[in-house]
Image (cartoon, rainbow, N blue to C red; front, side, top):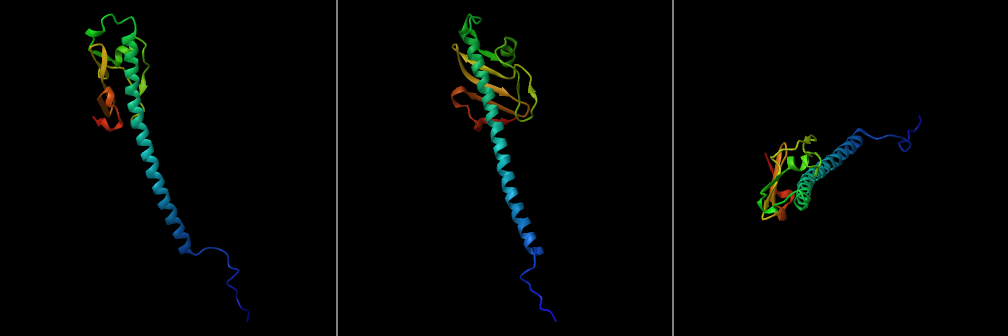
Length: 141
């Protein structure tokens, strides 16, 4: 009778394979959560940057010769900025759709200076004084 040697066996047992699959699944779930958080943060930052773009375009509009009496102006809308070619249409980062120029998105002007911005997206809004713009003030519609 021949003695069988267990040292030359190749392969893994079912328990070892299952353990590796469970560990890989756990690592993948942690990575998926991290990636989804990065995507959500980048959408928030893009929304804030859209508001900053509107502020900068309105500032250019105010400093242009077309505005004769800056002190009488109280509101500059996204629609006005688009119609006078100070800004292009931009995308709502949460839906991926173009945010059509409207009077719902605007900046408030006080004494010839921009003081507040209101950005109205499809699902979210941002309303803030220009010194306090951050992702923390984005609200749901």
